[in-house]
Length: 238
Image (cartoon, rainbow, N blue to C red):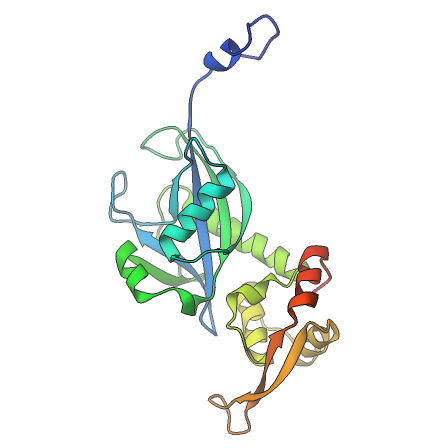
């Protein structure tokens, strides 16, 4: 018979009569190398499924919130603070983890791929994979990754969070490459440029990027104040 909380059970005893579960925070970390949207995975260092590719995750400690646990996991893997992250859902199938009854709260995070050092990659046996060529992952981690990509696609359509994946200065071509990588399809250059510039969140620099062409393309940076306003309020971005 299913147990229900009732007024007949005295105080704290209502809590003690129920099963205890482990709660984990799993993180899907996205990066962009200029051409491809990538996700960061690690080789699992313990059983079950030792040696297989996995998301970075950890159990939630008694004295921290789930958000705090996710931020801790991200810092441990990347060495970075103030990473953009967003919760995408709860995964609680009874048999999802053969090691025990574990309920996982999944997050996606966005980082500048250039800020993730080779030393950190070696320490955690981590590797970047193109989002379209991810390896076999343990448990339900592939499902988490696919949900995270879908959530990212919805997010960047209305909020300019994609800039978290770019270097401080970038060309319009690099920006368009990012959105094409996120959506997995080509965008019309003229329409994309017109829409982006109409938002007035970019500042044009005098400096040009000349590796891609002899003429070169001007670099842009985003206007911090206007960017934060759009990030908070949302706008039809793409």
